[in-house]
Image (cartoon, rainbow, N blue to C red):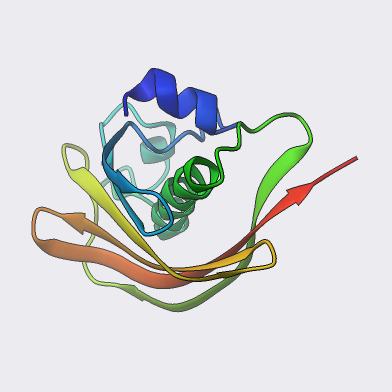
Length: 145
């Protein structure tokens, strides 16, 4: 799935869109996506000027966006102004290595449970074969007025 297809599935736009490409997707099961990390990212200006690293919360956001693509694809939902994908919980977060400009962050997310509009995912982001962050994510798809 290329960036044009991702833009149809995610409501996010620059500077918060954090999924560049979907490498693999099995509806209802798993997704493997890519975030290219470049020195041009807006957050590197202040985090940290002497040694730029991607903020951990943005790594988690990238994983959540990959999970959202999986959720929308699984249910064949095209997000609109009334559909939101919310964090409901984040557990067991472990940061294992910094993510720096030039890295390719592989977003690997698997469904562990889905019930009544709530999804639980096992998620990890890797650089090469090294885990950068891992977590359990809980998310909800909700309609808003």
